[in-house]
Image (cartoon, rainbow, N blue to C red):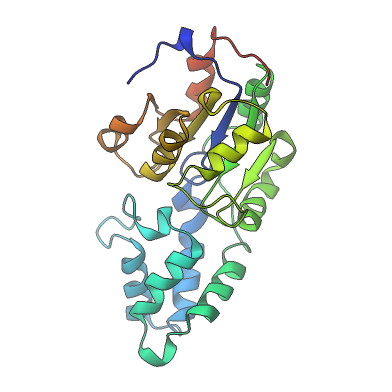
Length: 245
């Protein structure tokens, strides 16, 4: 369903992080490979097997849409990777712990747009802003901290923040509750199916962006709007009512 922008009544916007605000490949590719080589004890063939199990496409050199490295939690990625390793290396608890540490350090965060301009513009329209990610909350903070935008956000949740992981609606509902708005007045913006399913399940407005690796045709059935990137939100929302929550 495509909504007339003049009918949109939005109190807050909840963003996915990677692929929506942050360039996934530029930010996470080296971290993923670094972790894979660590668990592979430096063996190229094992590292590649881990990455392929996680969704790395050997032909394109990128991660496939909807694959574990793109949409899953660290616990789920650890389970996928542990299954690839030899039996004597299958320590799931140790891998979870190490992945938690490795995935929140030494990141080179690359934003997809000027986040200061985007957030300032949206906040100037009276909107409350948040982030919902299947990364950990600590990982989200570590990714955003170098960009100096955390203070512009009202809500940051990871899958471990107590609201569950996407595609369940918990984070969207928690954001709506936090800003004291009905879920129908929340806009969930994301680049993959889990993001939009989460928004739909909560009753929120859903906006798909094409800056991740999910094709338009996959997002279209779940999206009220499709944008090339998040900078298009300003034009989408201009002229619409934006009552502060």
